[in-house]
Length: 212
Image 1: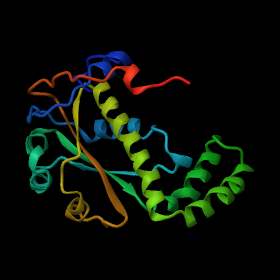
Image 2: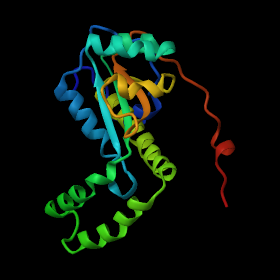
Image 3: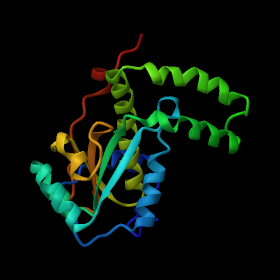
Image 4: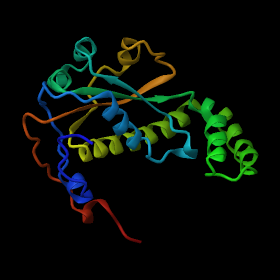
């Protein structure tokens, strides 16, 4: 766990989270700890457990300098952060279906006889789903994992900022990825704040929820 950890209290993690625009550039996150953060993030739910999320951890000076021009209005977050995590949706994520269900059975999460049932149920669905519908499903899952990543990062004592303002049509190719297969969800900067984020007004529950 990070030396910056403040609390594991869930209310503090969620209510105390802020979007941070400027980080301490001297703070580094080890590969071991970043792996732990990503592992925690990937406990998020996904449709049929297909886990379409893919991450590019941009932490080197060269990587951040390549990214910065693509995030014109968010360059401070990019350049001062410990890392920027580019979150993508893998549009060929169903190619992992057999591995996911086989491993689930091996680990005892699913009974052995369920593999053929679920494969026969879901493989035809993924074989015939339209590109637009698959994108919708994968982007919902990408949003779930992104939010979980930010909360896990806070539990490790780090601050984050979700960035949607960047050149999404260029990001995959900039980091040697197939832009048709890997579609961008968001960027998440992570590090230790150098300038505290500020609270923001949220609409009351009475405005955003109805009971029937």
